[in-house]
Image 1: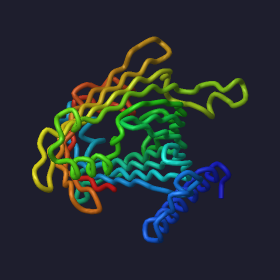
Image 2: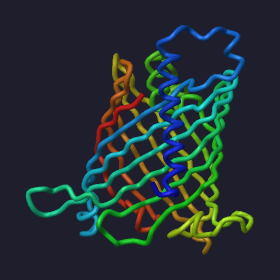
Image 3: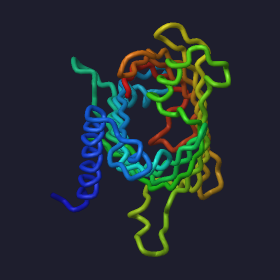
Length: 296
């Protein structure tokens, strides 16, 4: 096995072991009150997967590249200390399929992955986070763009029910909430690491981009809850500042119909990137997406 894959393998083993430990906690005996103040391994994990199809192509390159996309995301807590502090690891895999002529329309074109550690501190009504986001973007049988990867340090603050599963449970248990309580939000800052005190080569940390800073915000609102269903609208905003001082904006609007009952979450959604100024490898300007997601 090549040594460059060893960190990813170790990271994946840690996450899987956390999930197994979480199942033991979930189906075993209840945790004593005294243990709530101590160190607990694998207290929780979160999972989501979606499949979507793209629409509204601006030009021929979009037709070839954007057809279907499948995304899998797993987030597991390695350990927690008391009721407030959690140490997470996360893995994300995204497979993009383009369109090709012939009987088989699907053309696998890109494979993107991300992973990194994250610390989370939970306060009444707020969640604080910081961590490292490593993303690398791979092409399949294509050489259309330069290799792209980055390491980004980030901090964020948001409401307590940010995750899909938490939001679902929050709405299900409180169907008569006023409009302020049906709103979730998050604000974050990211710094793209291109140098590390001369210890690591620049090419090891980042390639194919000149991003330096990132400011991102997101909000989600459930204007209508009826029985087992909730209608959700969301807005995601992101601006990246590169070395040349350019401000590159990405704006996305979303509509979602969510099932609020059951152990697992299910939703159908529609996204519209009404503005995207990011580099070509990521750019989805004016694209529309429709898909289905499961989560827990």
